[in-house]
Length: 400
Ligand SMILES: Nc1nc2c(c(=O)[nH]1)N[C@H]1C(S)=C(S)[C@@H](COP(=O)(O)OP(=O)(O)OC[C@H]3O[C@@H](n4cnc5c(N)ncnc54)[C@H](O)[C@@H]3O)O[C@H]1N2
Ligand code: MOO
Ligand SMILES: [Mg+2]
Image (cartoon, rainbow, N blue to C red; front, side, top):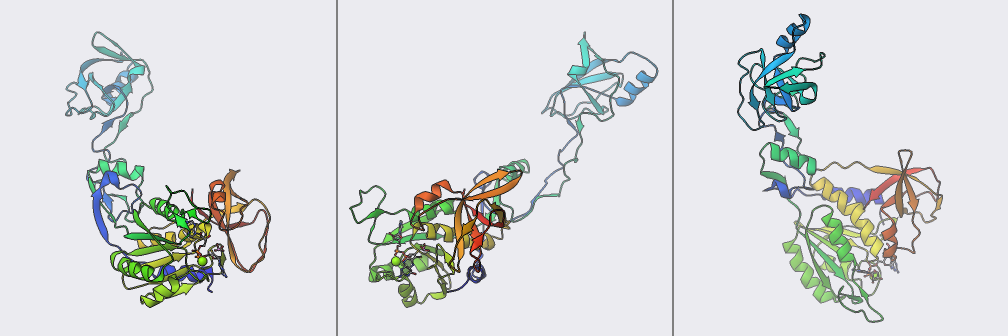
């Protein structure tokens, strides 16, 4: 049995680069960007009018103000958003301008409609304090052509999609996702649409795994194999050829029908470890072939769940070069856990005075999948310690 730290290290050593693909930008949310996004022009690309109103020459305004002359400007024309730039021909005059329009040539200041009175084609300014350049969003103020707007390896969100659209990136390079097969095992398991007999249950782990992968925008395929060693062997042999990653749930412990470790051995899969000093999820088996990684999670539902979060997620993040901050939270209650194992305890998160608080959720062990409904993270309590006090801070792994 190895420690959680060593297990994680071995998993992270086995990361793999799956290459890059180009996809439509609108399908890219959640994917990891594999190119720098550079401004194709200045941001904004022209001196942009920022308020509906009139544009004037500030120097004319201030000289009239100094000599107490009328602040009335004849309207020479209208500059709408989307129209080519026009020119203020006479600096005694003004041009009506709309938000988003190009600032007219020879004008440098915009005064809001709220601060002028327009009568008979003449706009009279009824404030005397204005600043040169006011209400003008200057060309290049937010970014210059060639500036890096989004760095490589960022996770794309709605914010990045807006930038991609603005710079005309209709296709974008992202990390290719691994091709994954999820396999459940067990004679006691029936389909979701079936009525289980007394001694049977519906399978759930494949679907939690599919859903945990969907959070990473990874689509996957699923299969179920009964506890029949020759069938397991022949099916897994094929999957090893066709997939980058195989995720298993069940059949890795000590039972008479827990065939997976033997099957992997007979198929020449290199075992990197079996059994980790943790609860739940202790009988976790991890190994690899030249082209495939195998995460064989213990069958108890919470064991499968927590191991996917604690090992597969970091493996994926490292494979695609995504930096993810380790979050921590404050334990809300005293917890006693005697075994010398890392304890992944399900918790409900809340916020108090700006601090993240983790309240333990009572469950009935790793088979009690319904208890996860009330939790939104696991808090990771270290081994070599059995009393954990309210107020102490520990790492958490969120799943909601
Ligand atoms: N003698 C020992 N027995 C067990 C040990 C041990 O160390 N010594 N470890 C226990 C621990 S911890 C776990 S976790 C389980 C792991 O068992 P397996 O990985 O071999 O899984 P199974 O035996 O196939 O099933 C265990 C349990 O999980 C349910 N299960 C399995 N797959 C699914 C699924 N897809 N959806 C829903 N539920 C599933 C299955 O029905 C069993 O109840 O072993 C302990 N035993
Ligand atoms: O991993 Mo087992 O789930 O400790 O029960
Ligand atoms: Mg078993």
